[in-house]
Image (cartoon, rainbow, N blue to C red):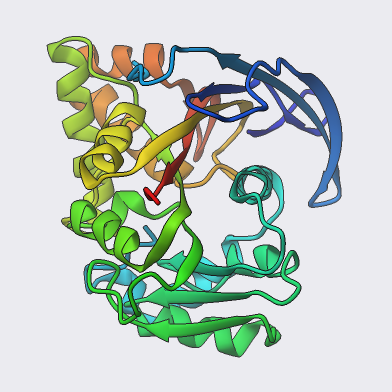
Length: 335
């Protein structure tokens, strides 16, 4: 995750990719340690990544302990918010890094028909479209304001089209897509079960569905469970009543119950150490929850510091240090 170090540079620190594969995936067993450099807001980013891939016998079920769905008619249906969201959702920093990883996971040849569920303004679909040759991307979203902003502020791309529609009632033919993805949006869906079933319906046999979403820690005790409730309460004030963070295992269960085979699960953890939450997706809402807990529930505040990040408020700013995790999970429709 992007963080500002003492020299004023942005650093992508402590990125961990825990990659679990099952079945016939032939690239299992890779253990990579890589360093890279990126450019974001005129600062140098120094990436550090670890890919940990673990093996399990065929058929072994494995779970980790550790949208914009826009189904609710709140801020995502407001043109002003949609424009602000599009402005902030650049493909630089952590969002761009995660999107690149997701595109790699889609394993595109360039000839596929691809579905972007909850496409929003098309910020993620557009870099995916660069990998298209004869293929096409269809973006679906229920929030017309988001689609309108996408049309107004971004250049049209021949391999990408948008349509209005609900994620759990897709206006699409069955067995018509080779790939599908939902990025940074699963937590917005009020009916995630309906969404993954609908994606299953429109995918062809053997089609791949990739889910990329921020996740929270698995609750290990009553304090963790209470903290999860509080975090979701704070986010629902601005994101709507259907908002709910998932865990990696809850996403796996969601896909498994819908009938998907899950050959790969990646857990991507990004560390940060900086002034304020700029550059961290939904960071300001996390800080809002932390400051409330500090006043109202000291025990939960201490657990927040242990599980996620510490903060030191001064004037109208706060120095934050910690890490957030994202799940990148692949589901495959049976042939």
